[in-house]
Length: 367
Image (tube, rainbow, N blue to C red; front, side, top):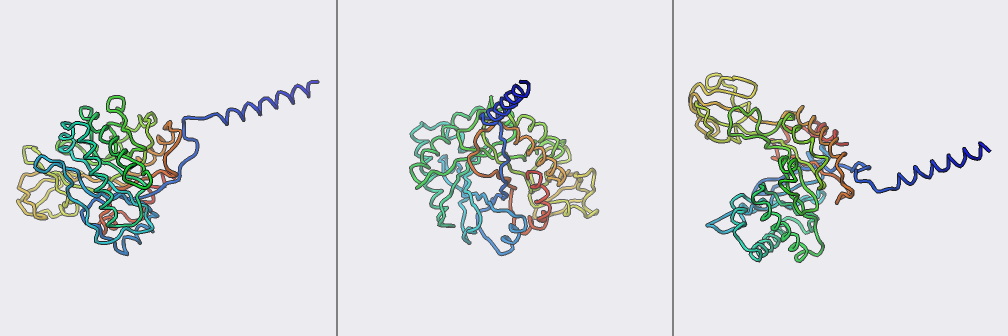
């Protein structure tokens, strides 16, 4: 009698567990495979055997290539800085075209009626297809739009994205995915900033603070700053890939702390001559004798701050991203993998500054 009741109870427990396991869940239960890649942000595409070797060592298989900017010329929205392909795109890489929309173009876009936005979207898709065919015969499976929208121009930008999607369907033999870049701020405050009408987003974890303020410790990237945003990531309702920085710059300030400019070619190793530079803190220097460096005049009294991502910060943030992405409530991811991108690939300098093991150590936090 008791044995029979126990058997029935046990059977009910098993059936109950099976039913619960079969219920749909909003959280990703299965971890997605990782695809590694880089942004290519130049106006000329060149590819050498050393590039293929580096990608093989990193086990990278994706390349997001900026095709052109959508900018403002004589008050007209036109393509700028169109990519010239000196070499064909490597056949073994999954390449994604990227179109960057400038703030000036977005502002102009807001003044246009819906039919003109539709016409512009058509021109952009047609231009994308033509540029793409210069470098490869393979159709693209995804188009990415890069733009820093605000709450005030959100409606215009989102309408523009919808028009792009419609034109992709009209001008491609099959419908590519549409993705867009998303900064940490609109991710955290998505209820105010809105969620773009795209298939997935690319979370850009860099350019986190104002570079024009001298007191900014590191404008490009710090784990501390990224962490303050990423607590909100699990609630974001759009599938996300991620991007981390590999670039650096030096911010130049006058003696009165007034911002002058960003110097992309000057780095720590350029500021080690004690005749001209005095190191104040870890990444701060003072010019003690006027000099010209990399074609730029640095005046005595100028203050310099070198911003660059630290390996330890990149690894810590990758670990946190992995944790938060697994908590994100996304039922269906639009691709079979999640992508981590690095901005950007600069050939020899990337190979020298970020050896394959450094990239692998960052990526392993996602695996």
